[in-house]
Image (cartoon, rainbow, N blue to C red):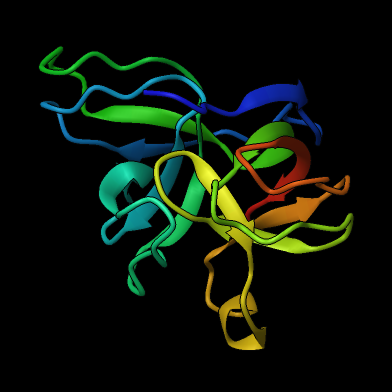
Length: 148
């Protein structure tokens, strides 16, 4: 997969506050993949949607994969970072982003701005941009990630 998150700084006393989630055995996941959460405490890769499309309304941001997971390796759990500063890639169709703007997943390991206050309270918010984007064409920016 492409556009995986790159760690800039893991924050908090637990260095990124990793939380373990259930994942499918048959799915390969790259370290740095943006992950959604589904009930019961199950994580899915963000590629589950069309690039640039809104995320599923019942899938909330869970975190960023700590390590690689090979498909069919008999492993069904994976740690996800839930706090830190990461380099993340803007979706090619995303509007320009200013520092302080809230962002959400928008396709396979890409982000875009949060469209309205309804989404801000829905659990889809991934974090806050720490720098401006100059052109919104798959640009990489630093984002303060914090799952609450």
